[in-house]
Length: 425
Image 1 (cartoon, rainbow, N blue to C red):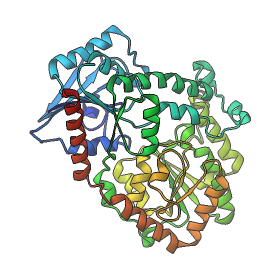
Image 2: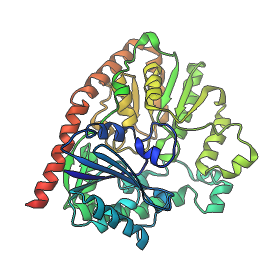
Image 3: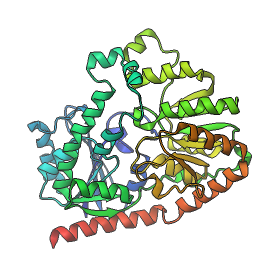
Image 4: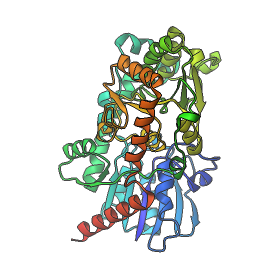
């Protein structure tokens, strides 16, 4: 079986093709999912994405070919450009895939590929739903906060938060077209399935969880190694990740536990940035910097910057609490990773999260806007370590069950076979 994977981000050997160093936490599930195909003679896989290159770049290793196509990064890709469409024609002619697997609807190069190869059976893994992101993008920010978040860069590029929301809403039209071209989606939960079926009632829905890297299975949270009063959260680059709500909660936690520290992966500190740097900062970053100052939280924050999966697992294994304050999530791989490690977790009850994090059974949940309750949950976990331990142990047990890489690999392969059988029938 020849499978064409279309991804939004470079990972693994695609990093090498693009001349990028190392690894970060973004897309760790792709490395894990691909590992099950490497060296398997039943499959040939081409992993393709787009970037800033003048020519098609290929790197073949065994049964896997890594392909970088011209067209610019996904966010700047023009899916109606004839040259870009011809690149996908080249991929079809040279690789001749039996099946296309598009990893996400967030960008339009996958749509271009589906248009060119509309006769090839395909399936889309739903990562983030654009229409849902647009609905919740402002994430509880007041009009005053939105006005105050306007940065010089935003004005120059005409790209402030409310315009970003409209961009997601506009791109959701392409997302809907992708689903109509494919008619097959892979989801993790009923919430996502319901949205996909509303967008396209003809969708055939397949269920399969994302594969999690071994780094998280090798770690185990214990009370003995915990950094007291430490909180770790998910990456926080734009409003739906909810860092502003977590900061408001942190201000309340600090009043009860003055030694509290929040560790933020994926982001560089917005504090101490030069004047020139502030001219380039996005509005949400400006808002976060101002909020930190208003709440007096600078000494309670550590911005970790980009992290490898191993570093993320280390942070999860030693944090007192893991917090997910997002305004919307389909499935949060970061939360799942933290639960596998066994960290006591507090998460907003949004999107598909309540389908696997059950309040006071394997974590604590709250309504996204209620940052006061988020603060109370964190403080109570600090104050009751045995309860935190019980929640973490149950989180690890519940999330490890049925999620082994072998189990998920078999599920994914069976989905491929079902898609091909339905197309042939």
